Structures are given as C-alpha cells and as structure tokens.
Image (cartoon, rainbow, N blue to C red; front, side):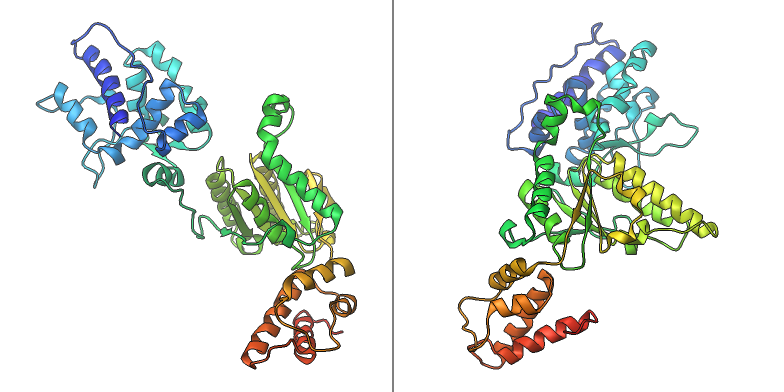
Length: 434
C-alpha cells in the first residue's frame, strides 16, 4: 500500500505545486511503484501491462478503500483554511467523510486546466484497458453534467480480489440470474461418442489458445471475439457436465443460466436481466452456459400480437449480446427440432449429445457400480446395457437408489430385484415403461 500512496503523493504534489505557484515545472512521476509481487494489485499491473496513466486510474479508484483521508489531508496542505477548489473534482457523500475521486479528479491530475492537454486525455475514459475491460467505470452523472464528473468505480469482483486476495463469485439474484457450477468428475467420467468428444476438445482448444490465435495469427482483425456453441441432447446426456469440465480444466468459472426462468412475462424485463448478466460477465473470462434455450429460441409462427413481436426482439437481443461477448457462450437445448435453423448459423460449433449406445451404457454401468460390492448370481452389466436405454444421469440415479436400499437392508450384495425395481422407477419418472 505504501508504494501506491507514495506514487499518488508524488503525482498530487507535482500538480498542486505548479497550481499554487510552488514550482514552475510539472514533474511527471515515473512508474516505479514498488509492490510485493504476490500482491494482487501487482499481479493485475503485470498481467495487463499497465502504463503510467493507467496506474493513476487504478490507484485513484482504490484510494478511498486504502486511505480515505488521503485527498482531504493533501488538499489541506495547499488550502489550510479550507475553501472550494472545483478544478480538482471529487465527491463528498453522506457516509464517507473523505473525498471520492471522480473522472474530473483524474483529468485534472493528468492535464491540469490546459484545454488542449485535457482534450488529449479525454479518450482515456474509453481507450484505457481498465475501462475497456470493465474493471473500472465512471459512476452516473446527471444529464446536464460532464460524463467524467461521475465517481471512479471498480467492478465488485475485481475490487474484492485486489483488496482481499480472492475473487468473490456473484450469488444468484434478479440482477445476476446465474448459478456457479463445479464438478469433481473428470474427462474419463464423460462417456460420449468419439465424434462428440472431438468437438468438445475443439472448444477446449479455443479456450486454451484463442488469445494466441488472435494475436500471433492476426485473426483478431477478421473474426468476432468470443466463441459460440450450441449443445443438443436429451436430459442427462452430459451437457452440463461438459460445461463444468471445460471450466475445470481451463481454470474458468462456469455460470449456468436457466433461460426458462429468465424469460419474463413482463415486457422489457428479459432484456434487462440479460443486459445485467452480460455486463457483469464482460472480460471476466467466465463460461456462460444457457440451459433450456428452447424457452427463447423455440421456433415461432407468424407474429400474432404484441407479445410475439416482443419475444422476437428478445431473441434478437440475446443473439446480439452472444455475438459481441468476448468469452465462451454455450446454449443448450433438449431437442434440435425445437430450434429455428436460422439461429444455428450464428454458432461456430453445434454438438449433438445422443442417448448412449450399448458400448457407452456398458461403460457407464461399469464406472458407477462399485467393485467392492458383489452381485447376486444371474446379474450382469452386459444385460443391463443391452436391455435398458438409459442416460448417464439415469444410471447414476439408479445406482444411488440401489445403494441406499442395499445399505438400509444390511445387505452385502446387489440384489437383482432391487436393481430392476430402481430401473423401473427411473423409467416411470420420465413416462417410459420397458
């Protein structure tokens, strides 16, 4: 923290000495901030290769949290009897007793009151990597006020990481209708056909190498940012697990959004929720997994009323945000026939998750039934895999049912009757009988 305050003190002193006639020269402090390299602030500076002016943006934004009294005390050195100094900007709020830096404060420290120099630095609010990535933004200002008069604000997740060393994951809410998903399983637990696995590997490759592809191969000028994928397949065939594994093995957080819950009957609410979600996720390197995509992307007949018309606008809005999002976006649907083919052209990859074949069902049974518990005579995995068309999720549910009943009955073998009854229960849940 001392390095940050020393840097800000040098910048403020150089600007205010000149402003109040204590010096004729404006000495620009060099970006030689000394920070512990384990400090999250140092990590951010190194990772983003922040320039001198970016450091000032970052440190001013953090200042109210590190030293709330700093600006007030510094100004008191130059205006000991108090008074207004409007060129400096800054806000005083109801509860915070110090000065909160604004865009005006930043602009003043960089350019003073020189009109030409101020105009030179105005693009900083758009071009600085901190603003571009949504790490820092300007608070709202009245429509009659300059846009830079708003407070310098930091994204909540980044703020928590820089202050406490950990990135807080946002909780599910109306402003962020998404749930963080994790898995303790691994790739070998994902039993899928070879073709499907190859397509999933292509997505993993994009997550690992897309930045190099854009920079080293120069494709950043020719292709849109981000990667868009559609998953199709019945429930329980591995769509959610796949999203979780992609995140687990590339070090990214995965958030599942149930579109059937997001789509609102109130006009405008769906777009509002989606806007808040994408704004929050921008530049976070998260994987967004939209489940139940049929709720918004289902085939539509001709527009009959205002509600249908607005539903089409919601689809267009989501497609627009999906295409402009810089990260991986996955939409999942149970049935390919439910999705208008016009939408599919917007996606780079379409992956079909089919019901497991005999070979895959055999592997799923073998992976989930414990080797330590013997079978009743006459039971065989081959028979189960051949007779019953079940998904991976179905098989896990069945094994759980059998395991609980076997333990409750004090049994030490897997009974054929219990196993077949559990299969019957699972099939009947989905309206299927064998």
